Length: 326
Image (tube, rainbow, N blue to C red; front, side, top):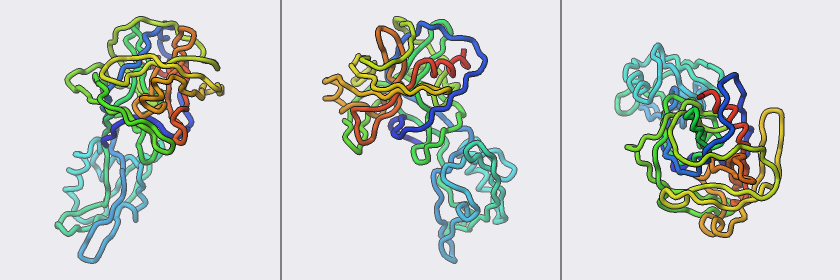
């Protein structure tokens, strides 16, 4: 699956669970740098089900068996499926007999017996459109120089159609530059258009979860202390042109605390940022939030009907998951 940006548009629960691990430093290098992101999935995702044209008319084998868009196919018959190539190779061996398809559906394993259909080209088909990876542009949130751990995005890499968190196979981050901006408007979120330099590898992705992506990398910069986010004036770091990080004013309107995580509602107040982007746009996810000289959180979502406003996550919630990489 190829997408231009990796970001969120709707409010969703952010689920991150703290586990025992090495603690990260409480002084971190704030990001704002644009990152090129490449990730393959563990298994292949069903992007859609389709009809197969046969001599007796159109049929939909996968849909008839109960397979749905968003399912992750992990096994076809006796063959383990890691990539779309694995799936293509396994399908080429079909003989017309029913085949068992094992999927992961929202964390639960399910099995379906699918009757292949003989297509007009003489090949046996299951009627599936598949995705086995994503690429896009996001924003670095922080880097811990002591452990070499970074965090970015502030939310998961998810399927654009279903919203399901994509199971991580392998992933990497690369250097990227922003080349143009499509400003956001009510009902139509904007985006940062970036170019990824795949020769400039920066680090790997070890975790993809509701609090962001995390892994090992190496970045330079001056560290800031971390702090608790609160209502009031703040700023964000992000890249709107080339690889130059700039600072823009925002205001934290509300802080929503729960036993699991902290979410904040924010509004862009900086005239320059509003002029250039209309507010929060795709590609800005992960932009670090600075308040009273401390790193306190990251931008995560934009309001579809009001691009001047959106949501963020606290830095402490991101750190609780990043510690698994330390």
